[in-house]
Length: 288
Image (tube, rainbow, N blue to C red):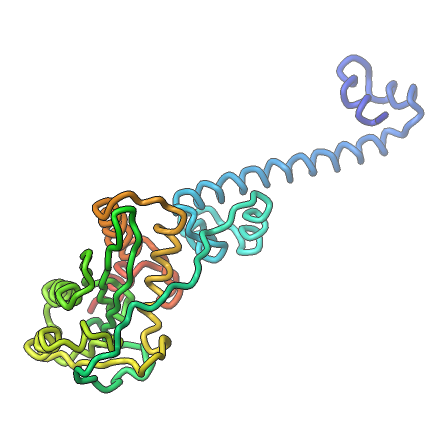
């Protein structure tokens, strides 16, 4: 209390006189002020860090936790350590969106031919158009269900084809696959891995693969790990742009999913398996 009083009044009286009047040493007062200044500076620095981290958190639509935010901030020129980001998020009560489990959409109770499992959970690739995977998920709106089929290139984790429909029929996966083939071009010899769903086993879908000299591969029955990359994409998508949202119509859901796939995920989202960069950037950096 005495030191604080001297600090407030030293413009009116000399510091030495104030110290004598209050029976404190000048060295003690200067030591107290030095510690006080350091504490104030630390608080100011912390406020700057908190503000930068919160801005990055909001800019990334509250989807990133500490590891991705650290990479994002460092690349933007704001150098910060992982533990500093984690502590700031905790201090500010900021938590990345978290997900929950979803039911499977696969209907494998059919008599259609099943392709062998060529992938065997080996998701590594040397180049684009070597291994793709596909899957279907469902999205709830107040108008009813909207089904989404995607095709993912396992080299970069880029979504290269997708389709949405209110009906979960074979045309859904055919449209997504056709989009991927048209977008990527040279697909001869490629492995297309899916589950055993009737849509993927249909004659029309298999004919599309055969016509483009694509090899069909299918997961073992009931083994979600065989198609883990597609499952992971759907989990991230639902956590980051669907959970907690009251989506009125299928058209609005289409807009949300389009933006997520083509802008957020393919072009901006940092993916752990490819060095914390986006699929599009990964392909550009590794282009021949």
